[in-house]
Amino acid sequence: MEFPKKQQKNKAPLLNEKNKILLSSGISILYILINTILIANEMYWFSLLPIIVVFAFTFLYRLDFIYILVALLTPMSIDITNFGTSVGLAMPTEPILAALLVVFVFKLFHDKSYDRKIFTHPISYSIYFYLIWMFITVITSVEIAVSIKWFVAKLWLIIPMYFFGIAVFKDIKNIPRFVWAYTLGFIPVIIFTISVHAANGFSDHAAHWAMSPFFNDHTSYGAMLAMVIPIIFGFTISPEKRSQNTRLFTFIALAILIIAIYFSISRAAWLSLLGAMGVYFMIKFRIKLAWVLTGLFVVLAVAFSFKEQIIMKMEKNKQDSSDNFVEHVQSVSNIATDASNLERINRWNSALRLFIEKPIFGWGPGTYQFVYAPYQSVADKTVISTNVGNKGTAHSEYLLILSEEGVFGLLSFVIILILVATTSLRVYKESKNKIARKYNLLLFLGLITYYAHAFLNNFLDTDKAAVPFWGFIAAIVAIDLFHKDKKEIEE
Image 1 (spheres, one colour):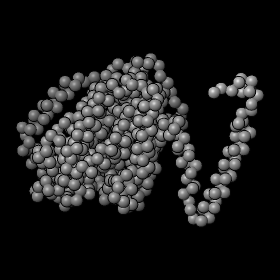
Image 2 (cartoon, helix red, strand yellow):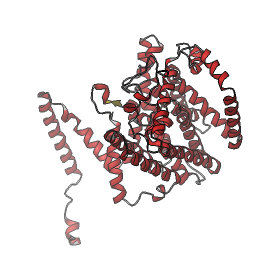
Image 3 (cartoon, one colour):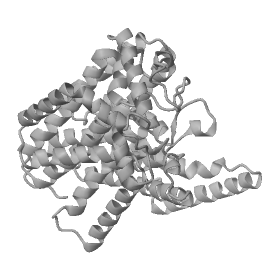
Image 4 (cartoon, helix red, strand yellow):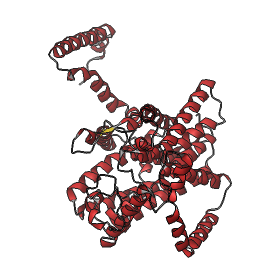
């Protein structure tokens, strides 16, 4: 019921500027008094109330800020299992992502402004297939409780980062903001890691754990560094006009990342950067995919023909992992004495044996570490082999999915990778503006590092990798849907 216009005009607002100031001052004074009393009684939790209130309002009105905040916090997140808990949860990012999932789904049903064509993009369809098949393998899992937890965690890692991410990246300026947020969150971790590493004489042994508790080991740390280095490198050499301070800041950030990846001693990370470089030259010089595939086929055919000689040569390589850069690179092909390489082969063979026994549905998402032990061959075991699954899983994203979700699980994941690649290459070819084209290429090169790294390790079950991985894919889709046809875009 409406008031008469005359009454509305004469009636003073309940909260005019003076009343707002008095109310906010009163609430602040009341909060200070209550908090002082609680602190005097050694109760400190009430001090968090302002942060919680600000966070709640941001969740309600600026979800895009939360999305960028997740990128900032992810490199600094800590798995609470490091503190003796049995629940694996990355704090604070995974609870934020879980809340973001709930709020996003709620808004989908109540806010009609979400662009529905996001749901019909080919990459979106491939993700539906990926998640639906994963759910089917949860039902058939040998450890259904483990698989349910795994699946739920996948939902809050994928849905907010991809489906909500595309909406965030409708503003193209959010793409560099996202990348920079992740990078800036990484820098304190890098400083901490190098400090610990230096305190231990930059030894090879210390390099494996110096990044703890932020990263489990040097492999995940190196992999995530490799994902952002191509993008920050692209920002650094970008010809667009920028201030000297901006250029200096970008250069310093790149230098820090390069120093960090060097001291990570992650051979897989170094190789993945070479892979990204190779893809860049293929795109830059317009080398046809058919030529690449033909060349790859020839190389594989020759390798297969001389496999015995190649294996004998590799077995003669006795160079183990080393503090020396050249020796460490040489150890990549050591399958005779290098424990890391041999253990990786052990995990791969175990994954293949698991797949052979359950080729269609697999053993269930998240189950590899609980079921692989009996499938290790005595001949494959190394000095670092374990039967309790506490030192990583299959050491390959592809073989992990194959063993846990069967052939269709791997197929669904590979389809996503192929569609991302074809979409990105098409956008690069068709884009009418330089900025969108540049962002698309740099994001794709960042993803290529993980495409390559995924042969040797698996990290997509962690926020560290899932946030940039699905975020980069979301940005590429956003460029395809909203930005590639715009003639002018401000950076």
